[in-house]
Image (tube, rainbow, N blue to C red):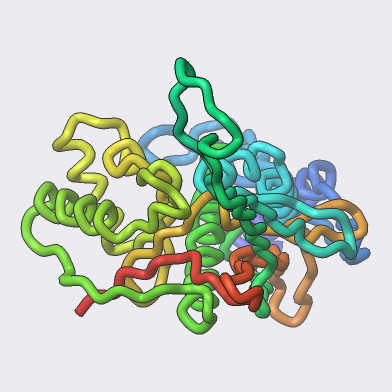
Length: 358
């Protein structure tokens, strides 16, 4: 065997030994990922690379840097669990109650109707220092008030929000606790805006809304905010609430930034403090402003047999090597009010005021 042949054989042996060592390291540090619901399982091999110095050259005396791979299933399961906990947290419903009355009702039950008494005034004026005989004593004709019943609307909203997480994207990009927290926060914002948008669609098409055409405010944010406050104050219904604090306002997403800027300019904390009422944004087409009386309207979420109002599922799409996360639920809008008129006939009362743009 020539010297050249011996050198080539020695180099090949070193390469084979290096490859064998890398494979052994990858196998020793491999992890097994499983998901109980789908029964899916995979082996994640570790990454092995030579230790390098700052300028990129190999400088580690043959040492290997081993990195254990975190697969996409870890992120997908963490995302699904975090979304489920966030949506079904009592604090989430309490936050909704700050803007509009909301309930999560037991499995297979109907929404709780709102029953309010409209009292008739039978008061009598009299002079306590005067003595009255039966002939001249103060009298009054007794009138009886009516009970206003607010029940669920004919249509409900079944919402479904889903996202597809590809293994390739998550394995190459990775994630941190902070990035997961930001992703969950954005998902909650999108879900709330979408639910409000679907409720707006229901209000527009139902006989629950009184429509009033107004001129759309223009100008700088401060001027638009002042015009909006004037429009709301003039067009609210005193029978359902004497001040703006008795209402919840639904605004298009395009107006939120303008009102937020006006709030900063006015030196208040947020839009709700600026307008003096609860504010919820809705996505999609600008349909104007919606005034919902808080005492006369409510959101009622159906719950599953497990007690979750927003069930979140995690499934595996093996054909695309991806995870699918879905959040769904059903909400009923309690806003269909009825009462009896002077003739005893049951009539519908439009509770919600919609300010549409001319």
